[in-house]
Image 1 (tube, rainbow, N blue to C red):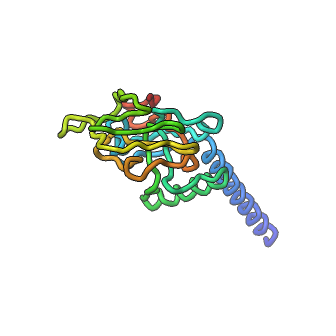
Image 2: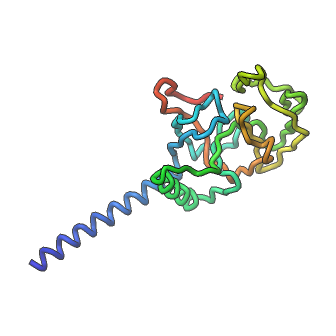
Image 3: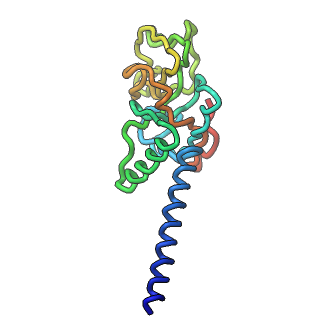
Amino acid sequence: MANKSKSIIREISEWVLLIVAAFFIASLIQSELFALTEVNMESMMETLEPGDKLIMNKLAYNFDEPQRGDIIIFLRDEPVNGVLGRASIYISDIAKKLNKDFRRNRLIKRVIGVPGDTIEIVDNVLYVNGVEQNEPYARIDPYEKIVLNRQLEKVDVKAGQLFVMGDNRGHSMDSRDFGVISQSWVEGKAIFRIMPFSKFGKLNK
């Protein structure tokens, strides 16, 4: 009887170890390839709405550089720090979700300026390298009836930096407020919306 009990305990232990190992491996894969993320703020309206669920490609910038117009997800003031860093972030995200919370410094914005660019906003008009920008994705404020770009003195985007803005310019805290961001903060590129089903599909620039 004792041997049978030990055998059952051993079998249970092995299953627990297998489950833990599977969870760890899945976490590493999830943290390094693709991830599901949710829009929690209004700064990207009308392109993205609160509650939208997106697929993020975490490998997008392993072999390429961010481009103007990309929608990126980043952790403000928090470098991602490679495989272990991504796994740690993923696991802590699960813990937050179980507590019905989310990471407050995870932001979704659009890349406006890349290294070498000069950004300026004059009389509410956005210029990149002296060229006025045509931005069909930028939200026209329903009250002011214009895109609320505000004013901004010239900002030079240096190597390893990005200048980002939300599409809902009147309700977005972005590089106009906290300055350029470090590329080391970038988790990945938002590439696909899976919910709501009415908007299911690839995210375009």
